[in-house]
Image (tube, rainbow, N blue to C red; front, side):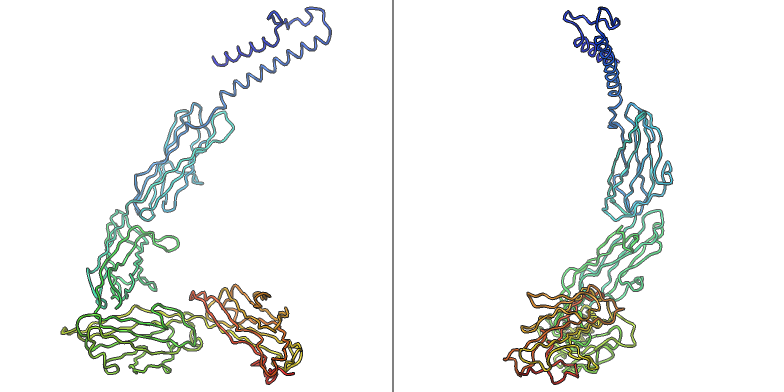
Length: 614
């Protein structure tokens, strides 16, 4: 009120300064004719009075609204609280606090909360509305309150969960919406699920090993749908597990329920490959299963061991590589088993085997095997003893050798099989009858080796002048003649049945003297183009599903022979190349076909008409 009085006094002084006469006296506005005056003077005085009234009203409005429009909401408080750290698998409370620290009431107040993934609300006080918000209504000056949420924590250890609350409201007698936002981040620091891993201190390749994982639910509540996943170290050869792993998924165990304070053990058994060395560890993670079937790692453990140097080093090489690479139908697989006595004492009565099971059976052509040592075959296993290889009777320290053999793959998928994933499982093993003077056999194995077969793609490049029934496709003289134009048709045919192909491309470079006519006779799918600079014809297709058995692409080329070409068969294309990506195997397929010549191999009507004549 004092401010308004002061402002009014200031306004009065300003008006007096404007309208006072030379002696500082204001005119008498109540007497419009104090002195004889003209009508114009009366109008001017009236306008001045009206202006003074309107100005006073404007200033009064400014003074009044300046006292109420300064609301900022800075003193409206909103905060989120929780324990210092959350525990995975346990319940937790999150509290939202609000307070009106302003001098005016707040109307239509409501709170919304964004809950992070991994926090499942099971209740709140007060209860939320159907839309998930909390309507508060009016909050008097100084008024405050709290909302307490109860929830389950379903996130991995060390995960950060961020909660964000929003308070919407309107100050009393104010027509604008205001909003206050608060956030709070808390880390998952503990878990109700405990996991511990142990392994033998030391072992050598071929020794039986057991990695043990003990788990416990330390809470007062049952845990449902819990999964443990173990990751094997390099060189580990899985043998068995107790309890058995999930069906069709090795190294994974799913538990419908772990009772409150319940305990259990998962034991993973196996051996290490002959080439394994040094510290090794099997890691495991355990927790709830998320919506995509992955494990929310509430607990993790590591089981350690150290693999000592083996007495016998054993390795398997397939097609020149010690790591798996895909093969194609009709390929010959070349195997090499390398062995060496890496110890200090002789190894006696050594037996070496190659185990080659496949899916489906019979994709290796055993009848056509090439093995100079003539190992004994039993099913899908080849074995060499001191009878086939006398050096295996006694391997002195440092002795080494290699066994080489090859087996062709079948040329196409088996007609009676519905399997689409063709794979050869390869592994070598050695049985040692005696180590030095110590009797008792011991076995060492190489790591399993899976060779997947690429899809049964075929690529045919062919030139024609006539159709199969003798109808001309080309034009010009045949046989080709010097300085005369002859047009031929080039056909590319791609066939495939087993796996879906992506990113397909076929290409060839036209030789000098051969012209691209620009006529594309047939393109079943994709696009065909020609690069004039590089003289390369290219066909591209992004996808060829197994429902499409074949695709044909054809185009015309023109040949004009020169005198030096007389008596020759000329090339119409360069090498023909097909490249595609096998979606199932995850590898590139490359097929090539030789250049197409004027002899038009496969066009019976044009047979014998490929040599250039004068």
